[in-house]
Image (cartoon, rainbow, N blue to C red; front, top):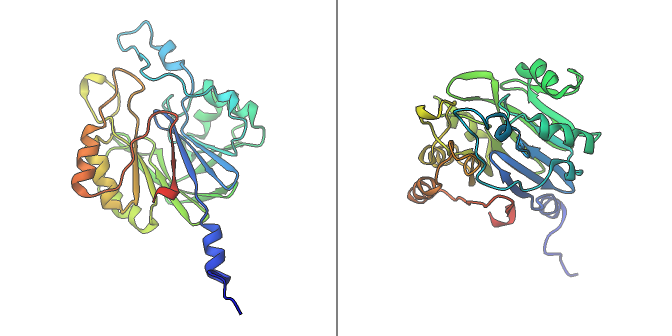
Length: 270
C-alpha cells in the first residue's frame, strides 16, 4: 500500500500552517490576512494630522501618499489601537472603517476606553479592552497585552502579541526600550515583530520611539524570526532612514525585511 507523504497529525499541522500575509500601510499601520480573515493594526489612513497642524510651528508634512482610503477596506474583521495618539487612533480612519465593516471588532487598551469612545463617538461598551498580561479573542485572533513605554511606562500604551493558527506576531504601537521587555516577549515564540525605528529627538517635541539599532536589537533579543521596521517616512519632521536598522540587523544576523508602503510580506518567506 502506498503511504502518503504526510498523514494524520503531521498533515493537519501542515494544513493549519498556511501562510499569512502582511501589508505595510504606512506609519505603524499593517493589514494581516490569514485564512480569509483580516486584522488591521493601528491604521492611519487620512490627512487629519496634516490638516490639524498646517498652520502651526510643527507642521505634519506628509512624505508618503495615502495607500488606500479607509472606506475601501470593507473586509476588516478586527482593528487595533495601541494608544490615543492620532496616528494610532484616528477618527477619520476608524469612522469610515466602522461604517464599512458593521461587525468589526475594535481592540484597545482598557485604560483608554472613555477617550476612545469620545473620539470615535461610539458606545463605550463596544471595544474590547486589554490590560497588561490579559488576553482576548476576536475573529480567530488571540491578543495578549504587553505594555509599551512611549517615553513612559503606562497602561495607556499597549503592545499586542497576536496569535492565529500556529503563528505569533508582535506590534508594540509606540515604545522605547524598558527593562525586561525582551525577556517578556521571548516565551511567546514570535514569528514576526513590527517595530518603530524613528527614534527620539528633543527638537521634535513629541514622544520618542526605538531607533533603528534598538529595534534590530530588541528583535534579536526577543527571538523574533523576522522583523519589519515601521513608523518612518510619514511626516517630514518625525522620520528616520532605515539604514541604521538594516546595518544593525545584518551585524546581529537578525532576519529582516524593509517594505515600501503598500508592499506585501508573506510568512512563506520564513
